[in-house]
Image 1 (cartoon, rainbow, N blue to C red):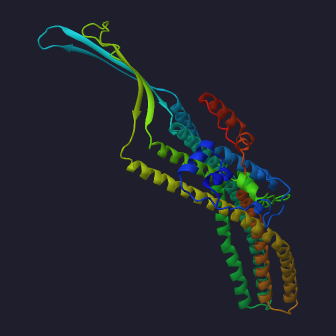
Image 2: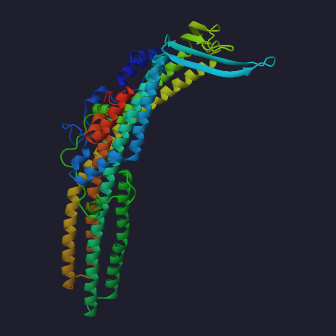
Image 3: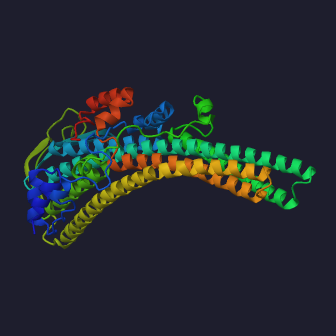
Length: 499
């Protein structure tokens, strides 16, 4: 069994100090090899194509400009993503604050009082003030661990923002697909209702001529009304999808005025063009932001554990103070009471360290939890990719059979009508053929929806956009420029972390 140090070096981006601390002071079993070496060189079982790299702007692969504009509007305006940006800003400010622990701290105090003695009629003006400064000598690594913890917390916030961006993009694309799918199914149902209404008119004419009966008419009317009853459901699905798009793109419900004419038109369901690349499991681990966030959380927990361990030792600081620099009695220019102090100081939570050791144990268990969550995140990611690719492939395989079934159902309806008109069969065969044709056409639309849905799910599983530069600069360069200016003023860069 490998040591924790080997595991951390293999899996995480950590400083050498933290790796040594973890190896020396935490008894955590090594994380199992979730992806063996041979697996990292292998392909996914259901991979469609492995020679083409995963594109960050994957929504452009569906050849639908309206879908592209909606996804990119969501990435620029979505409020959940805006909250993630604010959370990252908080992490940057916390990191900046933690780095100041390497510097000195200062303090000052002063007061001014007008006093009168009970035995005297004179008034005294008393003023006093003091200045102090302190600098912690980081003998036992507490400050370094504090900074490392803030750095990894900031990295986790960055990866969380990336993961939310991938989720928002996929949700917006899926809502658009749901909209087009509901429109397509509504169109199929409307055409079927129109066809069935024509059949009812035919039966009325035949009944007038004495060639039909009430049974045929009631059967046809039942099928027509059943189909007609499905229309409000599909219309509700259309409105639900539009409402979802409004929320995702950061506008009030019903305020999609610019896109309303295009959204209300019935258009084809977007189809993925070209090969669907998956890469290898090893590339997936480097690309998915939720995996990289889990890695950062482990590193953060190790750093927090080191902070707790530093409490076993005293805090050594160098202090300086100027006392009573304004001290007077009746004369504000009298500095006879002036004093100063300079020298090292020591503070320690001992000798009773039971509470400290309890906190260390808590930190160790939280680190174990982080390792377990990381492993589960990796396993879930691999399963998600395989599931999406398998479903995508299976829906593609169904396509030809469904198209053949629809063509056969159309021919069956045509023949059933002819045979009924010739008096060979009754109208029940026509109704059955109509129902079959409606089902097969609806199945084709649902297959189109499923193919695109699983393609979107696959890109979500691949990690989507995984570079912060791609996320910022490609989609909304104005926001990137403003953020860069803000980072420059703050003395830290949001884009400085490794991808």
